[in-house]
Length: 126
Image (cartoon, rainbow, N blue to C red):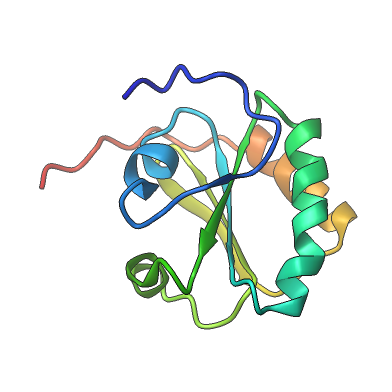
C-alpha cells in the first residue's frame, strides 16, 4: 500500500489490522484519538478533531481507534482511560495523554508536533 494517498481533511478510522501501515509507517505525523462510543468526553472531542483535520490537512493525519473493537491496540499502548490522545512522528511516540483537551490546546500540540524534529526510525524486522 502506498503512502501517497489523497490529502485527508477528516479523521479516519484505524484498527488493530491497519494501525501499522496507516499510523506507524506513514510519512506524515499522526494524532491518534483512542475513544469509545459510550464515552461522553470522547464525543466532545470528536467535532474538535474534525475541525482540526481540515485545518491541518496535508500536514498531519488524525486517526481514531475505537478501544472496544480494537483491544490489541489498547493493550499495546496501555490505554487505561479515554479519550487518550497520542501523537506519532517518524515512528516515534512524541506525546500521549489521557483526557479531553480544549481546542486551543489541541491546535498548539499539533503545531508543535509538525515543527518537532524527530530523527527517522528504521522499521524493525519481525
